Image 1 (cartoon, rainbow, N blue to C red):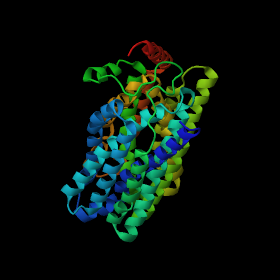
Image 2 (tube, one colour):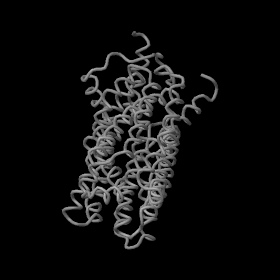
Image 3 (cartoon, helix red, strand yellow):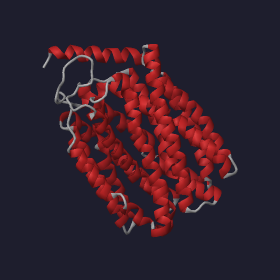
Image 4 (cartoon, one colour):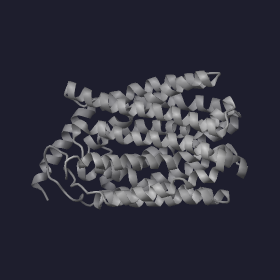
Length: 423
C-alpha cells in the first residue's frame, strides 16, 4: 500500500460513518412532525426506530459472513448504496406502512457496513494504535448524529420533514463509489506475526457460537447490549423529550440534541481511545475494558441528574457530561473485538456482537420507552426508570471480563502465529 494510504482509507470510512448516523438520526429529529401528520402514538412512533434496529441486527448475519469470505470494500459499498436509496424512499412515503418498510430496508443497508468496515480497518492499523483509529472512525458517528438532529430539525422546520431525508441520498451514492475504489488489504496484514490471507475458512453456526467462548468478547457483548438500549432509546427520544419538557420547537430541539450528542460523543470517543492506548503502552497490558466501565458508572450519574433538571440550561451540561462518559467505550471496545479474535474471523465476531446487542439491546428500546411513556403518561419518568439502571448493569457485565482481556489477546496472537504453518 502507498505510504499514508491507511489514513486515506480511515478518512473515507469516517465519511461513510458520518452518513451512516446522519441517515439514522434524521428520523428522531423530525419525529414530532411525522407523529402529528400520521396521528401516531408514542408506541407506533418508537416502532419506526425499532424496525430499523431489528432488521439491522438480523441482516448482520449474512453480511458479516460475506465480509469474512469476500471483499470487504465491496460489502461496504453495497451497503452505502442500499441505505441511501432507503433514506430517499423514507421521504417519499405516504403512509405508515411505507415509512415502516423504508426504515426496515435502511437496516439492511447499514448492517453490511459495520462488520466489514471494522474488519477492514483492523487490517490497516496495528494493535498499539487500533483503539485510537477506531475512535477516529467513531468520530464520524458524532458528526453524523449532530447533522442528522440539527440539520434534520432545521430543514424540517423550513421545508417540511420529507426534505430532510432527500438531502442525504446523493452524498451516499458518492461515498459508495469511493468505497468500491478502495484497496483491499490481506487478512492479518497489521499483525506482528502469522500469515496474510485473502479470506477465512468456511464459517458455520458452530464457528459463531465458538466465538462466545472467548470471555473478553462475551463480557464486551453483554456490556454493550445493556448500553445499546440506553443509547438507542435516548437518542431516539431526546428531541421529543426536549420539545415536551422544555417547550422547544423542532428546529431548536434537533439543534440542541445534535450539539450535545456531537460534543459528548466526539470528546468521549477520542478521549477513550487515547486513554486506552496510552494505558496499554504504559502498563504493557491491555486496558480497554476499564475505560468503558468508568464511563458507564459516571454516565449513569450524569444522565439521572440531567433528567431531574427543571430547566434546559441545567439539563444541557449534565447531559453533555453524561454523553461524553458513555462514549468513552467506543474506540476501546471496538478494538477489543479485533484484539481477541483472529483476523479471518473479525467481521464474523462483529456480526455475532451486533446480532446479540441489537436484538437484546436497542432493537426494541424506542418502542419499549414509548410503551412505558404511554402507560405512565410521562416520558421523563420512563427515561429515568430505564436508563441509569441499565448503565450500571453494563458496568457490571464489562467487569466480568477484566481478568481475561490480556490473556485472551495473547491467546489470539499465538493462534494466529501458529496458523502460518497451516493452509
